[in-house]
Length: 333
Image (cartoon, rainbow, N blue to C red):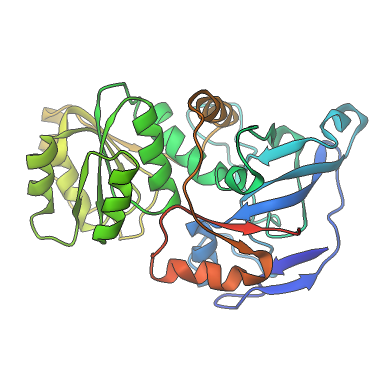
């Protein structure tokens, strides 16, 4: 089979022939029809991710058709159109993942290939209203945003939400999920065009975080936020304490702008704020997300679709963060 292989840090992807994965019991072989990039793939290529190993086939997001399964009991899946949950071996606790938890695409080979093997437990029927490309855009980013908003921040209808750094996959899903849940959503970005795109999707408004007075602008527009979703951290995080309404929840799942700065903890206890960390999501989160997508007929926002052989140029869009929504790869014909 053909696969995009990353041989080392800073290397370009190589499209090459590799063996079809061998299945263990309760695993399935999925013929990939479409896959999608995540910022995770970009960080791995930069060498700034834990547990690096090479060569590796990246890719956490994927949708396709089940070719075969590793046991008679699970053959009911053969021939079905599926979407893959990349959150593997979460464990028995909804509140946190177990130590053996890992994400598809490192340490195990992922979806940037004609075939991928995954645990049968991580297969879900593809939502019928989604194409393979749309379905492939959904898993990692959609799951991360869903858990952040609903399992962790307990978003309620009518609340005000701030999505920091709109444009990336998770942030765009957070905007979609919050809007369909009946929230009023505002965004920040370094580009005015992305704020305009977010408003076209239903955001109430937004500000440029490159402006010195961006926190004041947000307070004037919204008056404060019940939920703040952040993937950057860095110096801007300190302003979240002032932007949050009493009882507000600040939830974050990344740190692309650096560490959390020194905070005035008095604001946290006096305003009864919650600062919540989150990572990926459980099987229950994934099932609930799919039900939410089905109920509201949601389609992921896709920046662009590329053939597998153009993956290098596609991933390079992340170098300048010019994308809005998911970058998708079409695999095969």
